[in-house]
Length: 285
Image (cartoon, rainbow, N blue to C red; front, side):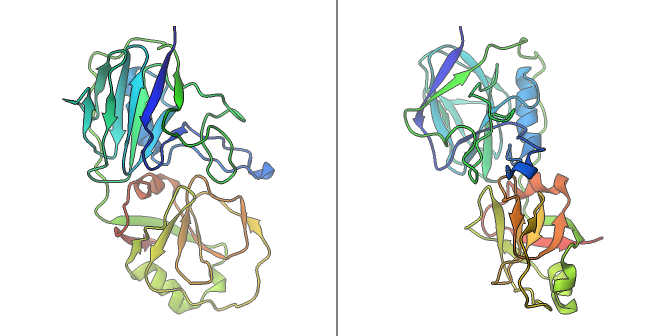
């Protein structure tokens, strides 16, 4: 029989995430999915799951869960304390949680987002081929609330015996490689120099939709209005205050502010683990 997890403590923001639902932008549906996809996949591999099996993505404060049957979990991503019925348990490795025991995934020590993978995967109802929660469109399961039940599937294979792996640490500085455009010509040469030479910082107002920055504003060469146009993952949009916003997985599919550059997708996993105040540099080399 399959298990269910009760959310004893849902945490600041805990959502179900998998590889997302790419290919639906023409319907106005963002990709969504785990912001730190490499961390999600590694946690799943430790349990013998398919790499893109659905997991729980926590934000800063973790969560607390109680299974109604014995399960095996792996907590990865942002380092955090893990306990089972108050006793310390491993982070970044498989942990057995007996039926009725309390699994506590604590607050992130460094980084932002931890991932709770369960052998068998989270089996929330899929929408457009994905179980991911999308905060912008409202598709997928709602963010976890205290008392919610999270369904878990039957493991397809045993947990690997040599279940250990190195985990990358959260960034002390966020270095984001970009390609300028498509609207770089809407900004002055001085603004483009500022973008690639100044040090910005991650704003506390960042979320799954976009990583906002604090720092010198970018001066526009064109003050006209831009008709709404398609937005891609990693787009660096510049709103009226001039501070760049990097679009993450729940970003809108269209927008009317100019996009000065686009961040290479592999760098976005690191951006997902950058807490407020982290220095940010954009590079074109």
